[in-house]
Length: 153
Image (cartoon, rainbow, N blue to C red; front, side, top):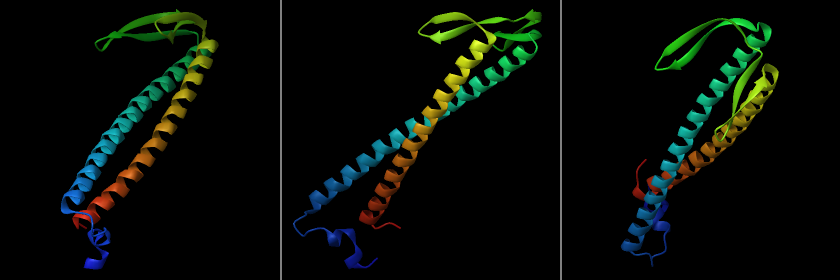
């Protein structure tokens, strides 16, 4: 890198070494904040994707129950334990609608509700992915500036 292409050469001569160091510290701080936010977004995407997979599995189970309402089921009761339930005639399910509220609904109503939630999660993931891309771009730009300032390639 030639002296004329150096970012410090383009800085007005009035900028003292202390001011340059202060700007560098500010840039590093901003990059750390962006990295933390980026990691939080990635974590949210992972959580939302796991929830989306859960909803899709539930919708598939509902489809199977709608096609064959008299089924044998394995009901998870926690700790990796499954309770076998034989010859169940499922016409309704108890549906948690949030805020600790549950309602009894027929299978088709449950499926419609779950599909609506699935769409909400897809939109949320799409929005989070957009934010991740924007922050990733800002991080890349900031890192490039930092590399120029420090003279690293």
